[in-house]
Image 1 (cartoon, protein in one colour):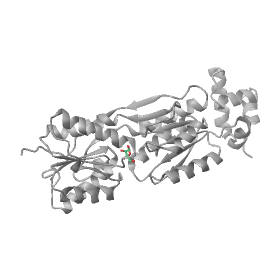
Image 2 (tube, rainbow, N blue to C red; image 1 turned 180 degrees about the vertical axis):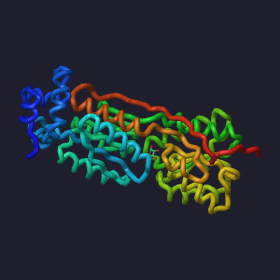
Image 3 (tube, rainbow, N blue to C red; image 1 turned 120 degrees about the vertical axis):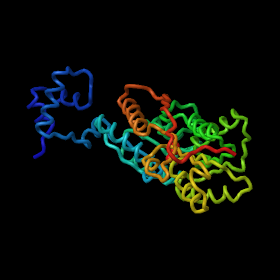
Image 4 (cartoon, rainbow, N blue to C red; image 1 turned 90 degrees about the vertical axis):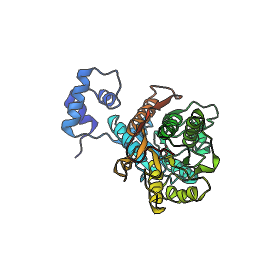
Length: 338
Ligand code: RIB
């Protein structure tokens, strides 16, 4: 028969209330008592009954993680950080893929609410996202991860992201320093805020170098390999032939490289390409991809820590955490002398 909380209390020589306080990480327990209880839990292989706990404390120790698509390694890395923190804090995570659909986002939020999860970590938000503002109105703990919205209706909101303006800027400045003057920019959907910011960084670098901002070579795609591939034909069939492409994520950049090969153009000799994220794909690409690094696992971990502290009542909402971005130079970019 599985061990109960009574067995743990008896073995550790403490009350049931003390065992419960240890399980819930209360700081009213002495270090010595905590160790005794943890030892008893270990020896008896005791697993707290989550459902019973939910009924008494209205907590399921469960978080909902919404991402657009786990097959993009950017989101696998974020999810790994979330999982690591959940595990460290005694929580579980349910992950849902929304396929960039606002309707699917709403459906999953509804399903997770039915499961009485304690809070949401959301990496799917669009600039104007009614699903997010509804959650804020209902005062359900949530943190946006790698995404932000334009208007939170005055509600305090937790956000963990990175400096996308800097990211777009350092990617473009790198290409300018290599001598490129005609730099195309291939972004994801315009309704996702990071794209507006990465574009702002791209424009900032061009203006700083007194280069013309040409809307004809700024494109919006879907943050996917296929989109990078297809848009490259559109870009290079236009009247301006860029010598470099700044792609707003690694998947898009890989699509660009594949299409350039199909067009008989060599990377980096004919066209330089910079990606964004620094996923594992950037390292194994051919040629290895110069890209903007995001601290993905750290972002996932920090977002989870924030929400758990909020759920436990240890902090109020309203924090913005911006993680670092830097440029990783590999072999997909080269000097241009014309
Ligand atoms: O939605 C996909 C993209 O959004 C990622 O690749 C990453 O760049 C994120 O900001």
